[in-house]
Amino acid sequence: MRKSRSVFRCTECGAEQPKWAGRCDGCGAWNTLVEEAVGRTGGRAVRQALQTSGSPPVRLSALTSGALPRWRTGLAEFDFVLGGGIVPGSVVLVGGEPGIGKSTLLLQCAARLEAAGVPTLYVSGEESPEQVRLRATRLTEDAGAVHVLGETRLEAIVHHAAALGARVVFVDSIQTTYTEALEGAPGNVGQVRDCAARLMRFAKEAGPAVFLVGHVTKGGGIAGPRTLEHIVDTVLYFEGEATLDHRILRAVKNRFGSVDEIGVFRMTGAGLEPVPDPAAAFLAGRHTGVSGSAVTALMEGTRPVLVEVQALASKAGFGTPQRVATGLDHRRLAVLLAVLERRGGLSFEALDVFVNVTGGVRLAEPSTDLAVLAALVSSVRDRPVPADAVFLGEVGLGGEIRPVAALERRLAEAARQGFRRVFCSARARGAPEGLELVGMEGIGDLARRLAA
Image 1 (cartoon, helix red, strand yellow):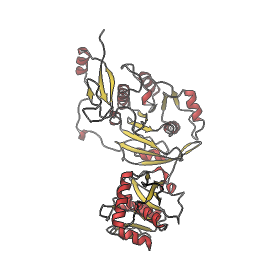
Image 2 (spheres, rainbow, N blue to C red; image 1 turned 45 degrees about the vertical axis):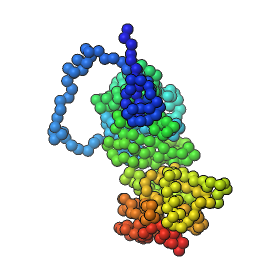
Image 3 (cartoon, helix red, strand yellow; image 1 turned 180 degrees about the vertical axis):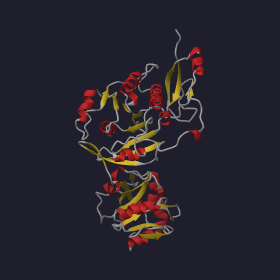
Image 4 (cartoon, one colour; image 1 turned 120 degrees about the horizontal axis):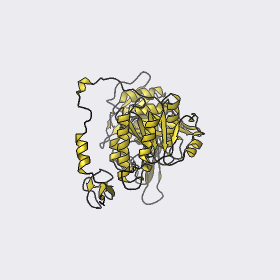
């Protein structure tokens, strides 16, 4: 009897090594090598594979070009993030923390697709069909027509999906799925990668769209090998705070649409409801006339979103002042505080500083620097910023205020939400009607204008 050999594969880069080591030679990551059983393929199977003839190569000019057909779910925000709907034959990976609403979102999509005449199959490896039915009774959509399969074996999933003629298959989750062709428990590196690859081949050959639910690790990434995200066509992350009603669906990879697009949903007792106007939703609880608050516009893909930045500077109660940032990189906050002290003349050495971005949004682009500084200046001086003002600008180490990209779309969204002034770089141009641009060269101008 021939023994199956084992290799050690890196979960980050997929590099293969013959023995375990603490550090991966491929990417340099630590403690990422896991054991994986590998079967042997005989020479006869190799010869048969070489003799198999597939589709012959064709010229690109011989292929017909046109818009990709798509199936719309009716959930406007979901279709928007996907780029206009579900593409037949595509593979979509949906990741998120436990309890965030991934299964609820996909069950709602399955119900709407069935109602539109698109056959679907919902495969649940973590719940029984009876448990899925109990969850479906809470939804606004009638999910009674959705076919549910309680199965974790890949061969059975593919068989039932093909026999049913399903055009969209939801697999919840890829970590619970296993194939009999490999040794090892479900969820290990080899099982996850091979199951995803075989489902991808099934989608490309048979034509159905496949949605895979992926668990998220403590570090925020999808559990399993990094190659899992390279295999699929689209990677979506479902994010949100447990204490908030809003959920954000973010596209980090999309072969059929724009990346970094977001869709905003509101979690209710009857399921997830799309939020048609995210900017208004994020500013709904804003109080004007309070110091330490400023509004900025950030770009999420092609969509401008207005969010509120809050700052609080208070006397430090201990020897070392605290620096706490929620929704903002703490290192970026440290840089902005240093620039404000050196170039703006404000001292924070005896003050605790707390910065918060409302709505669970994260500020990842430098165009929001000016809003953070405006909120800090407002809090230190205990004077509110103008209620009808938006702050847009990147702040350099010299205190200069630089223009931002996609300014026209940000200004248009600010005008639509009723704002009348935009504090920005002096080089900014092209304000829409009814919107005043307040140009500034450096943060010294910002401090003077907020004091006026």
